[in-house]
Length: 321
Image 1 (tube, rainbow, N blue to C red):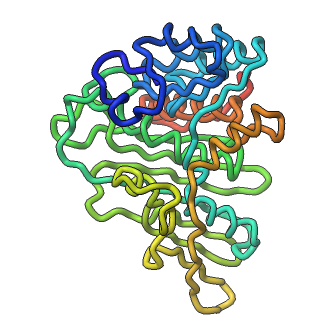
Image 2: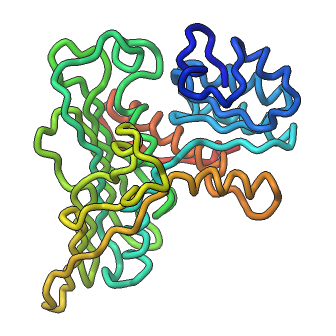
């Protein structure tokens, strides 16, 4: 573990080895996987340094600030024959796993619209932290966007077009704190995807709303793992990752059947690193592929461009490395 100054890391994790610099850490030849969880603007340079040092790399979201940087890292990892991935832990949210289960069941029929919110409420900007003080990589599109964009691309693949609005809505804020992203699909059938986030939702909207030709599914409430971890709850503690019944989703069939509650599957972020471990050992394929991460990065770029130009853009992933 690298901590350049202070002793918080040693205090909280006394059983781990600690280094004062990336160079000192890379001097330990026993370290084969490096996890980069630094401010977003430093991801690219640190990842490149670690790949050049022949280390496998996992980068926190956002992977990089541009698709060109993402492509460079992907080419380097391929050349070095190293694992490269992004910590898209919210594929292991219980509510997202439940959405996948509902879609796979076929109960909704052909999906015609999918909506995902990631809402929070904080009126006062935190201008003393890098995510909100105007430094590169700040704002909610970089912070929360990778989660919902990755989920949508995982479910439905590449859209045909994107229309987006990226905004600053809070008084005294200097980075984006609200955004909407509208994705249109043409193949294999017409479908729309609406992704939204705001820091001004004192009454959050539904987490997911999905309509199909034979049914609809609605889910309120966020996966509880993040709050449980921040509260000091252990992964193996009773109730960890379990959604309260009050937050279970509702599914209604268009045939006139009564609405029924759908128990939320248990979430477990450890599934991400279990997959990374097994991929490194050659037991399975990597779940979060770097090419998928490039697509997420590129779509966020296109969202900013669409918002700046005030128009719909074609989504072209032909530059994918």
